Image (cartoon, rainbow, N blue to C red):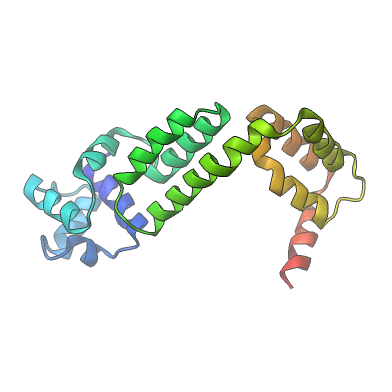
Length: 190
């Protein structure tokens, strides 16, 4: 990822315009060319822009080599740590999130992490295998799929490991037509 691409991703995450991102450090026109990799930005100007938006420079530069979007990367890390039932990894991710700029996206990460640490992780260990099997049976055996069975599935997705979840989703999609789900979706909108 180039500096321009990283700035573009960051600006979009912050919900800023190019003029707001440039913050009178460089012209909007110049900044636009940096995002499009036409011009290179000087170190002092880059650091000044990052500081004005409370963006940790270390975090910014560490993520330059990542090919994926920062938000996808953090959510992937949370999911993997949950699947591994690793509280330690989740706490390390918390430290990484704490380095992000204080904005709505960062607040979302913090909430997802807190939910995973305080609700999903402890509960996943406590759920008896018999209950998991009853939930699966309810979802798969129900020939009259309705909003309640869909809600049960939605509410319990986090208790299954990734292989079980892949199996359940594949089975549900094979068993029920997309027309049915579309009909239910539109019915519940109105």
